Image (cartoon, rainbow, N blue to C red):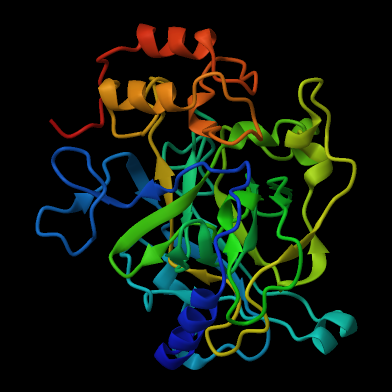
Length: 359
């Protein structure tokens, strides 16, 4: 995140352009704070409480290796521990790399956080592959207008032993360089931390589902146990386009109705080149309670008319079509279309309440 004067320039630049058509990856962020009715609120709201959907937060730092040039005010890794705050200054930066540093092979910035006690197998404070999303990463990006956001992106990796890691396969459809004050459509981004806003009265993070790592090599060879994750590593992505996504592991929304995978991986772009608090700014990582009821589309802990209205708004839409809402594809397994199978799940879960919901 940059200085106030830089942000003003950024807003002016964005105000000149139009809004880009939405992409296919429109999953909402997870709110850090809610009120007694389960509604997302600002951390500063007098009725705000930490979202009870969270059962824990990172407790320690295993290692922190920023890229060169991170300012002293942004280099305290302890600021990534504990609950999300929504404070854009309560962060640790991973740093950014210039083109010459990238060409020289200078390592990108990274940080590894610890959950529970790594020496205790199956510690209940470890992250495990439960129903729904499993953990959430909070950066300090923000929205300018519509789907256009100022983003600083990072890969997300998990480990059981601190040595072998599995990386979430990502997708980035941003077509080219966005520049230091550029924006990008977050619905073109998937499985990269930093796509959801966290600051200026909004506190949301990007959710991750360990189930999506089932085919990764270190999971298949059992060196990473998805039910015993003690470490999460965040790896910065300089937004120059020199670093790629893993799109070939994901379904291409343009391939309907036969559905096939992307045929190439894509370069990843974000705000670049940044300095001072450059690169990805980590605020917190929270561990989620299991989601028992898939019909809770808006994740407020109760299945009701609000969820029905969301599903009705996406009715008969397929992945990649205008009006598609990813959270409405709740049948198991998912079939990339919102139809009667999803309605059946909603009906079966009707008026059920998650145990963690505030009453």
